[in-house]
Image (spheres, one colour):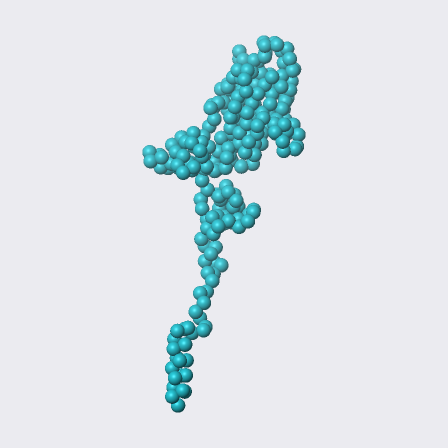
Length: 244
C-alpha cells in the first residue's frame, strides 16, 4: 500500500512538473497577422533594394530571402557626402535625411548636376574642348543640352560614355544658329549603345556628322529611363560626355 501511495504521489509531481501535454505549444502567428505588418506599395520604387511590389505589398523578389522585417522598411537614398543629397538634406549614416530647418523636404530626390540648368538649348552649357564629367539625369524629365563650336571642317564625333546606374538615353546632334539661338536640322541621332556586350568599350552612345569651320552645334541627351530617377532612392543615372 505504501508503494502504491508513493507511486501516485510521484505521478502527481511528474504531471505538475511537466504540465499538460496538450495546448502548451505556442501557436504560429497567423498568415493574416504576418501580412498585416508588410509595407504597402504602388510600385517597386516604394520598396527597399532587393524587394518589389507584389499585390500592393513589398516582398522579396530576387536572391535569398532577406532578414525578417527587411522589406517592411521605407526606402532611403544612399550617400557618401551631403553633395549626394538634395538641397535641405544632409548625409547622415550614409543616408540622406532632412535637416532640422527643412523637415518636410523629400530626401529621396537626387540633386541636380553642376551643368544645370541646361534643360533647353538656350540655357545649354558650353563644351570647352575637354570632357564634361558627371552629367546626371536627376529627374525623369531631365534633358541635357551642350553647345560646341567647331574651328575646322571635320567629322565631329560625340560620345556619351561611362554610362552608370542603368543609364538609358537618346543622343541627338543638331545644327545651331547661335546668333538667333535657333535649333537647326537634326544631323544624327541614336537610342542604342555602340554594341550590346557589357564592356566599357560598348557602354556608350555615339553619333557622328560632318561639320564646318566656324560652326556651332547643339548636342541633346534625353532621359529615356522607365522609372523617375530623380524621385526615387535609386542611384541616379549618370554619364560623361566628350566630343572630338
